[in-house]
Image (cartoon, rainbow, N blue to C red):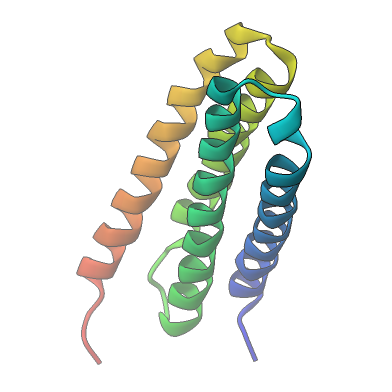
Length: 129
């Protein structure tokens, strides 16, 4: 049985992957007729990074489950925050033309970077069994 914390990040990853696929399909089938190519590219970037980091959440869940005390949750929360800030702001900019929301995008990018850094650091610090 998966640890509770691992289950939490597996579920969060599934929600973000599900909504990422839905957003991608919406972009490919609906928005390509209504958005200009530049904003469609912004929207596509949001969906790609959402999916990358949904899979990152699966890695976090796996790491938590396999490690007795690896403390990987911070990476998971940073990935989730990054998806909301990075992808969320890009979705908003592309769909609403409220360009000031783009100021949130780099914060999401920093959260992604910090999440990967923590995941790597915690992995490196694990003692081999």
